[in-house]
Amino acid sequence: MIKLSYDVKIYRQNLLEVIEDGDTVIELGCHTGGTTRLLPEDCNVIALDNSPEAIDEMEKLDVRFISGDVRRHEVIAEVFKIVQSCDVLAIDLGGGYHPDTVFKVFYIWSSTFKPKHAVIRNRGILEFFNSAEGSGEEIVSDEGYLETYHDSGIPPLIKEFDLWTPNLKR
Ligand SMILES: C[S@@+](CC[C@H](N)C(=O)[O-])C[C@H]1O[C@@H](n2cnc3c(N)ncnc32)[C@H](O)[C@@H]1O
View (cartoon, rainbow, N blue to C red):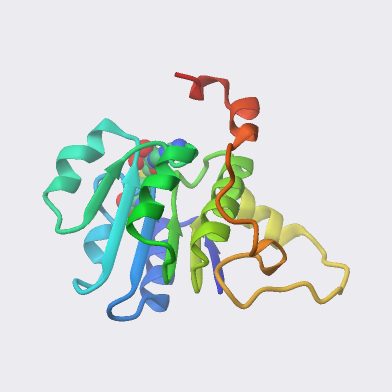
């Protein structure tokens, strides 16, 4: 299942609804752990954020935290060394963050880790979903990733990010 929201309270509620005891959860954009703290203790959580503010706060929690940019290939590769799949993929890069980037992050992370559920917080994607009228063709996924692209795997280079986000370059 893919759950979309904008309001952070609904995002957290959506997440808690799909998580089951013992689940492996990858949380992208954990910031200082406002949502991470709410997750069941027996979950295997890998939380990521590129904000310096996150580092000290996340170290206080009993979860694996990776400080890094989730658009970067080596960050995905680092997580892939730890787990090769997850039950829940949570994405909150900021509710108003560029929907194209958030969708790309969702696409790459979900096609790599094949979550049962993806929970995404982004206003633009929600607006698109609520406003678009489908053609009626039965192209749907019951999983937390797009079945059309489920075999794509981890891309060798995420070239589009370099094209779309100039300030990403080191
Ligand atoms: C609204 S905050 C997340 C709040 C958190 N989910 C919560 O519930 O408290 C958005 C976070 O996304 C992080 N972020 C944005 N773009 C990112 C990127 N490319 N890689 C890693 N983290 C990113 C920001 O640093 C920020 O901490």
